[in-house]
Length: 69
Image 1 (spheres, rainbow, N blue to C red):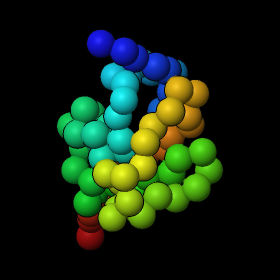
Image 2: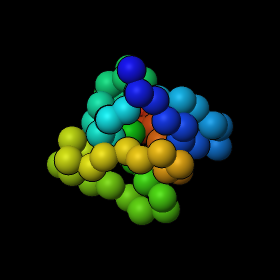
Image 3: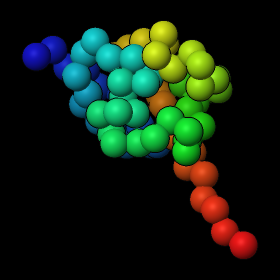
């Protein structure tokens, strides 16, 4: 299996390739409705996650929603 390295929330990480942002979230066990995805300093809207490829060297930030009261 081919792999490449990305920076995810400040940490270097190896991920399978090819993979989309939606696939990355699935790989990480995250619900796309519960996170905001930033790729290379740009916010990626939820409807575009499946069509947005992850590339070697990408910088990805995931911000999790936290409920409370």
